[in-house]
Length: 332
Ligand SMILES: Nc1ncnc2c1ncn2[C@@H]1O[C@H](COP(=O)(O)OP(=O)(O)OP(=O)(O)O)[C@@H](O)[C@H]1O
Image 1 (tube, rainbow, N blue to C red):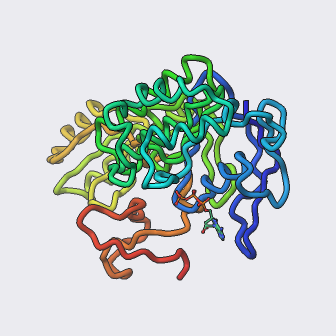
Image 2 (cartoon, rainbow, N blue to C red; image 1 turned 135 degrees about the vertical axis):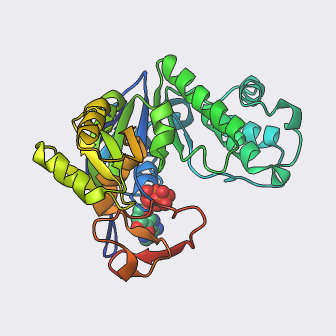
């Protein structure tokens, strides 16, 4: 397992990782989630001794990474794609790694086969697509047959087939009893892969919970109501002791009530409804709410500030499709 204790990293004024304490356990996929700039990569680099913590520690099976005798046989990692010499073939790249780490050369063929690169093993890697590059990076991580695997944003830029493949690979590795730690800034992706979640924002721990508990706590269900007689509907609901929240799109959102009951109430008062639909807030929304305070960069959705109604939801990270992606530092 991997244990972090008060792990902290400061770059000048910037506290990139702020006293992180958590444990990554074997046998499951643990998702490491946080918005852009939250400190995920910095944390992973410190786990692998590629960066020195300002304070705190990381233990890999009880030991510091530096004191592991054959690190590649203990921890395999995919940190950034294409961290290799483009003039070398995939086979030679892996062979160099194997030879310098006391790993038998037969293992090179095995991992090439596992990641589906056997047919291009002799080709120079500089012609590799992003997906092939990710597969080669994963082959390198698997080379030493390690019990602990770390993947930093492994699905970035991959096509659906590649994403599906990586997802299954991670689950299979965990099912073999290995410790699998994978970072992402996409909650929807993690919901399909991880059994446990560690969420950070601006370097701080925001949640350390099972995926099941996170879903149970955060999948808010409510009923959306839309009526041309908006104000009267609100009054009727309020008269019945029901609180309705006005949403930015002009609808009303009602918690803790079922749709048939609300529909009958409106009908009794002869209020026309244009929409009466049970909704379940997405996990992506729950994640955005959890990290809202700690998102460093907010997308500007194109509307001038005065046109944004108070309380309207912020544009999701990355901006709404079709809107200009004008990145503004929060508070700027
Ligand atoms: N070498 C460095 N020098 C100065 N600041 C750094 C350095 N590396 C990272 N940072 C800062 O530390 C913070 C955390 O960065 P990090 O790359 O770890 O975040 P992340 O969660 O991996 O983000 P992303 O999802 O965008 O990759 C950011 O504000 C970043 O600008």
